Length: 379
Image (cartoon, rainbow, N blue to C red; front, top):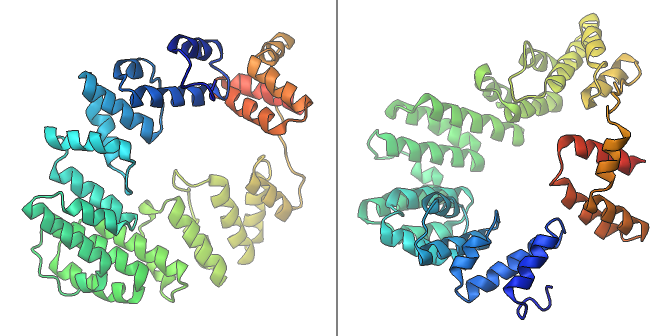
């Protein structure tokens, strides 16, 4: 189909897509056909057969089709989603963004939001391009952001800005960026800024979070203190990894014991948390408490459960539970065309094609079917 797609009739292409919807190649045929429809300006048919394509190119072409046909349902949300990226978008999006500007959908605030994303991605060229699209006051704001990004040291030194929402947001960005470049300078600068500006608790948290991370990365002598400034309620999975990293780098088991005392935050693997608490207890001579924790963890089929079993001298617990499926259920999964094709390709020694079929068919299967398929593969 692909080599002769340009000559094929729509009816033949549609028949192929309907007959072989689960083929790994079917989606690439649909995408190529959609691009051909767009190239010839056949926008109505494009919309009819777009499906649920996710690539930026095809999505922007869909928005072009909506503009051309006047079918604007969901246009604004999709257009904003494609606009708000911290990099240059593909050419197919340009007519969409032009339409957004003409209709007032693309205002200064949306442009500034993308400018911040561009700077966070270090795309200063894109940021400068976006600045030229702004009106007077917004353009000044954009220039301040770019200037702060390029020289956060100068931008945070004795700023002559009013204490308002915009200034605090800009200075928070600047001090965090300065911390990545020169942590000592940022640590000196931050208390001075706090005297003149009423930063929100969230902004203060963002800065303390940044300081702690950069201190551990740079093995700064104030790393322990900066980690301790992150309130326990704000400790998440990322900060915990830096706490752990610092404690192991410095051999500070007492600090690790204190950091892992109590229940772990929701987004932290509880087995990881309890294992390192037990290790800290063991290193500090609290052997019995450590063994009790190891014993509990060793009952789990889990990476940290296995590590705990090693420390405790126990066997790994696999906790196997048989899959309660009948022979009929196994046979139904075995008869799925994609499964059959995968096994046929494997029998022919065509491993790449077998894997492609296998991963493609899993997308259309239930959790139970996937587990049965795993059994079939293992057998």
